[in-house]
Image 1 (tube, rainbow, N blue to C red):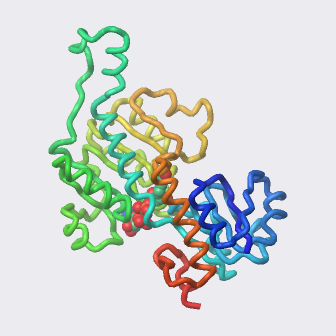
Image 2 (cartoon, rainbow, N blue to C red; image 1 turned 180 degrees about the vertical axis):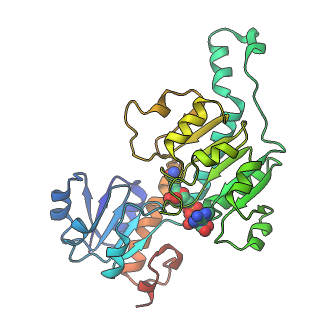
Length: 323
Ligand SMILES: NC(=O)c1ccc[n+]([C@@H]2O[C@H](COP(=O)([O-])OP(=O)(O)OC[C@H]3O[C@@H](n4cnc5c(N)ncnc54)[C@H](O)[C@@H]3O)[C@@H](O)[C@H]2O)c1
């Protein structure tokens, strides 16, 4: 069987595909017409961030599974896959730790303003340390986690180890589960935003979560707020965030994701010094890339071979496993 790899992945996944006698087709040309031609015969696709919509998918006559190298799948036409009995896999056990560590890095960098201390020393101004702006602890602060799935829970663990209070807003998770994780469930995002010193976002982007944090939310947030988004661009309204940072009505922000990726060259957020930006690489540590590559390829192998080792939770349209 033939598997297309769209976007490069760690060699370890390719090795196990080969060991299991799959033919590999590495796709580099992402133009629609080229994809339509190249994907015609494939049985499975490992997909990084390229978009696969009906115009291309309708040409894939043999396709049985798309395995996302990651957990979000807003780049795939899931309705088309459901209608045509094509499975969608995700790498549900691979990403959470790397993303949670990325958030901790952003929290600490922004709170400690560590870059300013670093450049002071490198400029030879060690003795001017009293001129540095105030910087802060995580200890005893209120953290608000929006979305308590795989990543939200890994982040909670790490925040609790810093002796913080962790508030969680996730209307789809039972309060008892949140309490079992030593976190405090809250009933509305507004309630959380009012008390939060740090906020991190871990929910999918959809009609309900678009602009989840916008002008109204910045009106009620604390002025020492540090806000981090590693989930999806568009959950925070970028214009509202720019105003909040520019007017210093919040302390800082960290973004790994943008409404449009890459952001345009003269995007207003790029001009600020109280924001930390990374290129959607929270999950791209070497360890995580290796795990994702293996997990995505195993999803394909186990699914196509109807192997009982398939992790059912990784198949988004799970009705297809039973058939
Ligand atoms: N930056 C990166 O590299 C990177 C890597 C992995 C995942 N992500 C993104 O991170 C996000 C979370 O991933 P995950 O693996 O934890 O997902 P998950 O599915 O395990 O958890 C998402 C949680 O969000 C909750 N949720 C949904 N709608 C909500 C709402 N309106 N209000 C509050 N909570 C809501 C769900 O109940 C669920 O518990 C996704 O958007 C994913 O695409 C980004």
